[in-house]
Image 1 (spheres, rainbow, N blue to C red):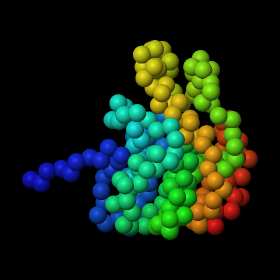
Image 2 (image 1 turned 90 degrees about the vertical axis):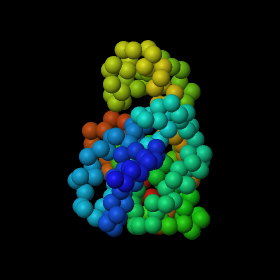
Image 3 (image 1 turned 180 degrees about the vertical axis):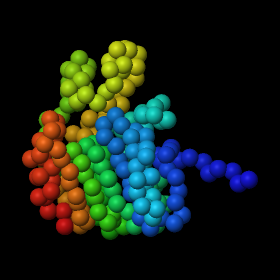
Image 4 (image 1 turned 60 degrees about the horizontal axis):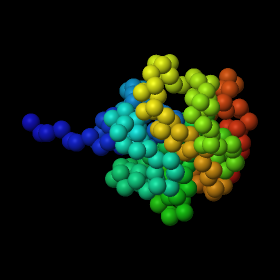
Length: 215
C-alpha cells in the first residue's frame, strides 16, 4: 500500500484532484480557518479542485504565531502556492481574505507572474480606501467589538483562558483586514458580493470595489 502523502499545513483539507482543470483558492475571514470551507468541494463540478488556505494561529496551526502584516504573510505563502499554479486558478476571499487575495494578485501583476482567471470577493470594500484601524483598541474595547460582530462563539467569552488564547490571533487578523492596499489594477475580472443585511460592510463599500478599475 502506498503511504499517504504528508499534509501541507497551509492546505490541511485539500483533496488533490489529478483531473482538475481549475483550482479555487479560498482565503478565510478574520478568525476563520480552512475548515470554514469544508463541504464546498463536494458542491463544485468534478473538474474543479478547491484549496482552502490555512493561516498560522488557528485550528491545527494554533501554536504558530499569526501574521500581523500582509507582506511577510505573502512571503511565506507564495512558495507553498507556487507548485499548485500549474493549472488555471481563481481566488475567493471573504472579508479579511479579500485583502490577502488581492495583495497576492497585485504582487504577481507587478512581477508578470501567472494571474488568476478571476477573483470573487465577499463582504469587503475597496481596499485602497483608508479605514479606521482597530489595532489601538484596548482589550475590553476589542472584546466588545468582537461581540458586535457575532462571529465568536459565546463559550470563548465565557472562559478567560480560551479568550486569552484567541485574542492575539483575532487582533492580528483585524490588522490584516485593516491594511490599506495600493490602487493597483490586477488585470483580471473581479466579482463582488455584499448584502443589504450586513451591518459591518454597507453595500456602498462592495459597490466601490466593483466600480474600481482593476483592468
